[in-house]
Length: 140
Image 1 (tube, helix red, strand yellow):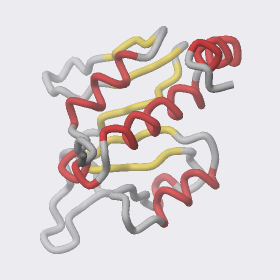
Image 2 (cartoon, rainbow, N blue to C red):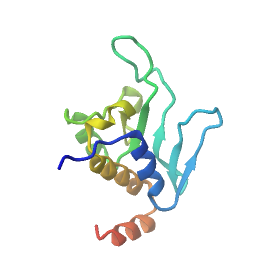
Image 3 (cartoon, rainbow, N blue to C red):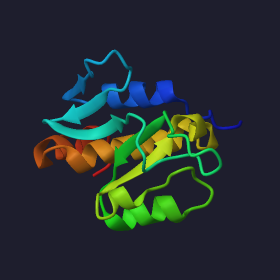
């Protein structure tokens, strides 16, 4: 059976389904929330920015999602794997995060996305919360 393709709705579902998450909404009427745990962002729907543009038209991408990662090694693994849609820009040099366009999420499975968002949450949650979650899910 083929794996279910990831969708933007899955990002919202997975991020909001993690424990102790707050969803911060912008007051500009756009649907670009920030998901936080303990006041720390782990998934961030970006506004169009000049660092992420279509190379042919120069138009700013309007569907970029920033996802925290645990380490620079994890970031490099994701952005250098040509089978995934993850990327970075010079603006994020030294920042523990990867970028992905919502329109390209179907290039990965929902299971892969789940693991990446859960890892993002784990990288930002307190040690106590992360340890509890890992024990509850028999991952530690």
